[in-house]
Image 1 (tube, rainbow, N blue to C red):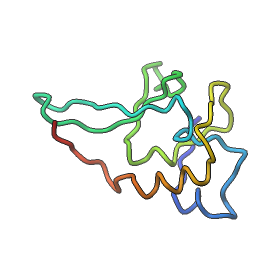
Image 2 (cartoon, helix red, strand yellow):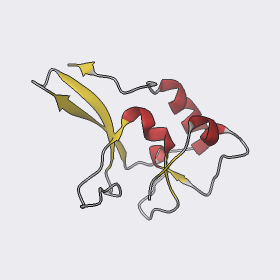
Image 3 (tube, one colour):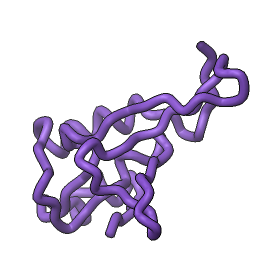
Image 4 (cartoon, rainbow, N blue to C red):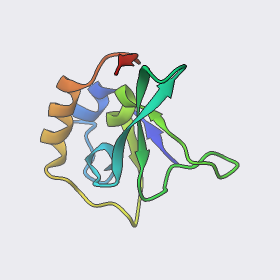
Length: 105
């Protein structure tokens, strides 16, 4: 099951947990574009390339890009780290939009 925490929780030294797996720091966490209308605009979403994010009926689940740093799992056999977790999440926090945005092609 995917857990969602706030950035403050993630980066707070007392609440930061090396026991959790933060999906954003995994090589399988991929950024994708989801087209809107006639295809001239799109949303940014993230997906698990290893297929770990599923809806109840088995369909693939996509998450909004700006929430990616809050996604975590207790365990994942497909997890492959992309580097130092704390530094990565801190840098990611600075670069993520604060809300869902529509982008133009």
